[in-house]
Image (cartoon, rainbow, N blue to C red; front, side):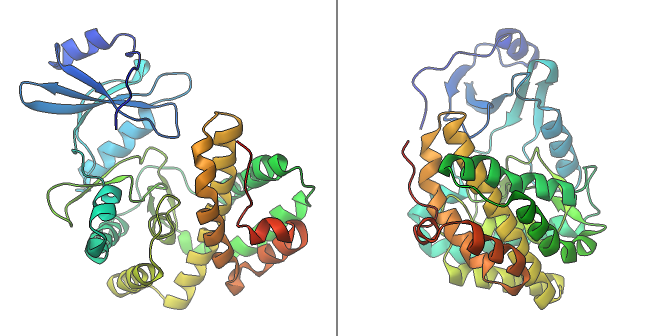
Length: 331
């Protein structure tokens, strides 16, 4: 799907001329949840992707750093063809049109094969030494879960015990902190809309990894298998977790407990982010995704590892909102 009109980035003609793409046809693409924009370029039978990440709201430097590291380590990130970081312009290899999400919508029978390819990519990533990224610290985990208080609870107009919320998360997350050292590269937004199929079901390309950190092995599995944007059948989730455990030899009990911890943490964060996208940025379409995310969060909270957080939800979030999986918002 393309936008009918989109102003072109400033300085684009000069940038494309220097990159050898002067005179290319420019096709604006539907944006995402950030301030970044994307365009597909066509010239003489070739195509490329243009990222517009304009300052001060965006900075392409983290994307460029992560893409270079992934490429140097044989992970399938798009090649950087040209860049002008101060202007926020990056010309990228075009991975085509076939997102994992779109393929599975049309061919649900391929789910096991496609998801196994995505898990195998994580196995390869986790075999590497961690990349040159900051650590996924307890402070960052707590900053993220506070988004639930700041945006969801505020939008609901409900009074909650904020100090107890943070304390519950500190208690729940403490056991996994030692198990994420020395850590692995965590892409942080690894899901079916950020994975491209490049000619076969197992040949997959990575997108949207500019927020990479060094953290726990379970995080990107949560991102993939507890997808905020599509329903992943429980049978697929269970099979992929079992496949990962077989391939890596991770301790099943400890790993699945940490998977639940990070599942709850990520889903709580996403609820807050989706409300923020509505209230701050006027993107009401993200409200429709909250029931799925809320349901996944409730399932994670049933794990004994989340007992302190589950108790906080029981004491602070009204039952009618929880039974409605977060309730409905007036957009």
